[in-house]
Length: 337
Image 1 (tube, rainbow, N blue to C red):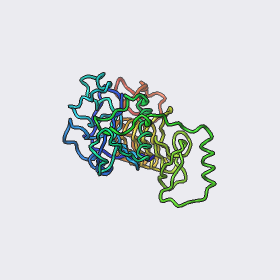
Image 2 (cartoon, one colour):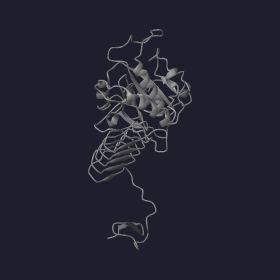
Image 3 (cartoon, rainbow, N blue to C red):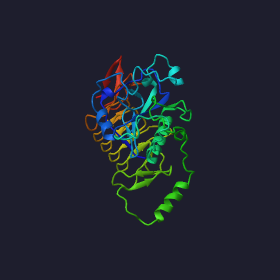
């Protein structure tokens, strides 16, 4: 499974306010990935209509990550009641966009017997279904929702009416400890074959495209392989994520000696850069750090970036402090010379 972090225009997202993610909505989109990419990068002109923006798009080749799930998108029309969905009924007067993650399922520019009618029995590519299953599992972990509840994953209207969603909600079982080493040993013993795209075998037995010129990719679980939670393609870089204490999802560390830790859809592409927490942050400059916030972009090398800064425990005296330290003189911040 390949996750591609894609840019989006700021107007394609908006705040959830006090609302949290409760469910996932699947949308049937008769467009190519390139068409969706292009629309997501242009300014939104029709607020209130359906299918204006998404958190993710998925097809047989990749998962495309756009808006972090910490924000809402414009995927469900204002006039759509989502009836008879029980979660919508439990949130009267609240736009469904505010409590849902929205996925565009790309069935291609040439529709498969669309519009869909019950019994049309379209055949969905196996890789698309696999990517969708892994994406649902990934969102469930990030949003702390139980996707095995059939009400949690819902189709938009009559779209994708012939898609059997229930098998996609089954948990993805990882290998037992030690099995991945056995698998890699077996693969190492096989004769080399031709492949246009080098592949890595993850600890979940899935194949992942290899990014970069370095012999390994490093992630938080220490396997040295790419997972669905992050891509670390720079030399000695780390993209931390997954269902562990470090958290994070869809992060990418492509700069050498860089790190993208926690948060969602963060990118650290500058050498020795770091993107920590928040969502949609991009550290492109060398030795730059972005801490928290949303959709922030670095502006200079050797610089710390943040949206808001709270300094706690400030010394109230300069006595004994080394040069360059900050202290509070009756509420006025000063720097020790």
